[in-house]
Image 1 (cartoon, rainbow, N blue to C red):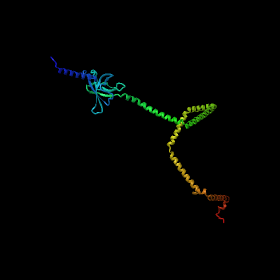
Image 2 (image 1 turned 180 degrees about the horizontal axis):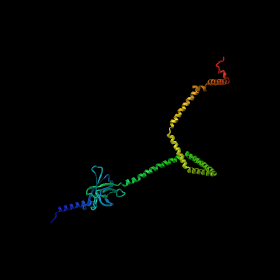
Image 3 (image 1 turned 120 degrees about the vertical axis):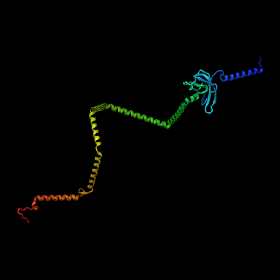
Image 4 (image 1 turned 90 degrees about the horizontal axis):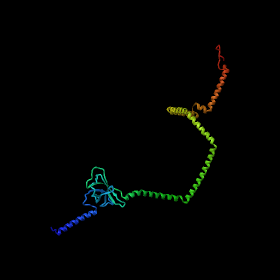
Length: 320
């Protein structure tokens, strides 16, 4: 059977297209003759992640990223990746974590295998998580150091300003005077301490006697603690009795009596009443004294000459 040129050309074209298709996919990292499972993940950002980026499980490559596009809401980025290992069990709670593969910012997807019994199916959307980039980690580590450095620089500036203020001529002179004053004070303290040592050395026997006396007093207090307790209890009883008694009314009554006495004394001093007139008026006193003297004379004359005042007649005869 003779094959026409057209059929040969068509067969070559089909074969060429097949080889071209396979070659393009091979260059992209896709093996069209190998089965795989496709999964989706949504991320807030995919800096450094590209098509053909690795998909890893515990650092072992199990697939690659096949497509990246913007979600419909334009707030997240959808990443499509294939897992070539069909024997790998991927639970539904597996996390597709975007990590930094090296120090140059190359990204990859690391599958953190979950622990649920439910298995993720082909074209399922997995949970996602993004690891901080190396720059972010460095910034996190450097930022506290930067703040401390700024604080240290500020402190150094303050110290420099303080040194400048301290070491000007006026301050230097003040510091010298202060040091001289301190030295003088120390000398005085040394002299005082020497004097105290001398006094204490000469009074050691007296101090010992005072200490012995204090010991004796404390011993007596300890021995008579029961009597002291009794006295304290009696004092407490007296104070309780005084507190329970109506002292306020007694004091008020005494105050009233004193006020009345003061009023009486004031009236006497002002000459009111008989007692006031007697005390303040000399004529009344003189008259009373004269009357008393006359009465005394009369009584004396009555005793000496009763016949002048009393007439007694046995026969009833009256004298002329």
